[in-house]
Image 1 (cartoon, protein in one colour):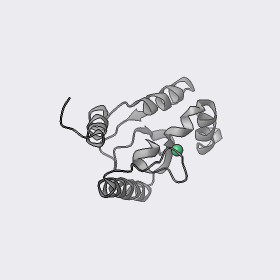
Image 2: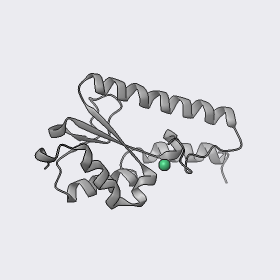
Image 3: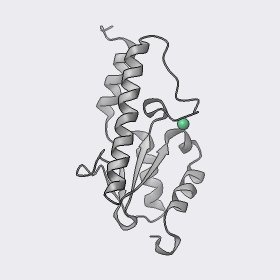
Length: 139
Ligand SMILES: [Zn+2]
């Protein structure tokens, strides 16, 4: 056993995983299958969006419901211990998310958030995404 608390360990794990976490991979492969062209982790844009569709001037963030506090979602639980730690952490995450979305919109990008819980129904998630793209310009 090591000295890390479970909270610290899962935090470290989330940092190590960083890119290409499963929900992101799922959204990318479903867009790819549907014929969309996109770029990933564009570091020159605010918040380094997970998926960028230049043709639609649209960026997609794939957010974990727990870390990014999906409102009203049952996956956005709050751990019972270390409450202050989590509160600070969550507040920082959501403040950053809002800031990045604001900056992106200012630059003329449409910002879409896909929540990880929505990926339990991938087909519905794809249809929801496609509704955001102008129909006459698809693919
Ligand atoms: Zn959720």
